[in-house]
Length: 378
Image 1: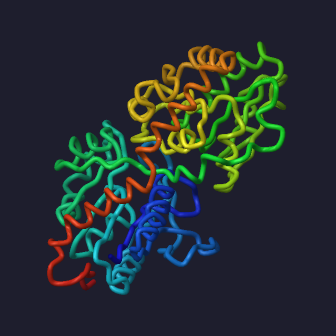
Image 2 (image 1 turned 180 degrees about the vertical axis):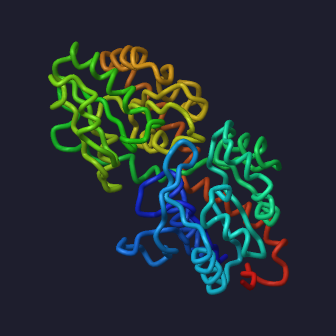
């Protein structure tokens, strides 16, 4: 098949949806399909041949975060041109409820369309208020995918209809055998975090508060932080005597991200909510990390109720500190969690997930009798 994937969020800022789409594209090409991805992106960003820029995005508050989206007449024209030139058998849009390229693609396209819903936000006033407008686009969708039960529930409650459940995928091989960073994990113990430092729902302030407690009692303990954001602002939340033990790498490459997971004794995901799945968890599981995560529904599901990673009460730095301390003192327990994580993550490998997505494509193809996906005149 020739498949067109549409990403609503800018490609040059890391995010779970962007990574999902990029990995799905690679997995589909590995299965022999032709793939083109349309995404917002700054002009100076270098892109592989199968990624097509729809122009610069603008920052918009969305789903408890700030998303960089692309909308308007110029964007619609670029979407229409890409569809006309693509000759796609199937159009696969992601997050069509977001005011960006995926929604525009649904409006301008005719033919077999599949939509994947990533968002988990049961209190989304924006989605509820725009439901009537969204229906004009979603009525064109022939097949719906939700990456988690939480995402499926958000879709059902706000927009109606249902979706087949296909989880986010992960390239297990990319993470399972990486080497640690130099001088890590170290003898005094180490905890890791990976995510946007300045996004409240990622929960870094909770981890920093817990590190204040742990660091005072554990002289050699270090915290390794990777991801975009203001490093000094993050360090300011830590006791001055402990700040030099907070090592912030900033935005890291995919290769170094894999090394981060292998560089710590405990990998912590202190997210507060708004997560429909948890790609960072499946990456860490692929690396065999001993995981400590907040007990939010999406994380509890991926970690099999706590058997593939330890859980603590979301937003509670005291509980985080206690749980992290217990793991740091129990290498045998960490080894058990590592083995369980490696076993559980096999269900999320892209080799299995991409095959399930292709089956959805095959199911909607009869809806496209008469030719490939077409762009309406505009």
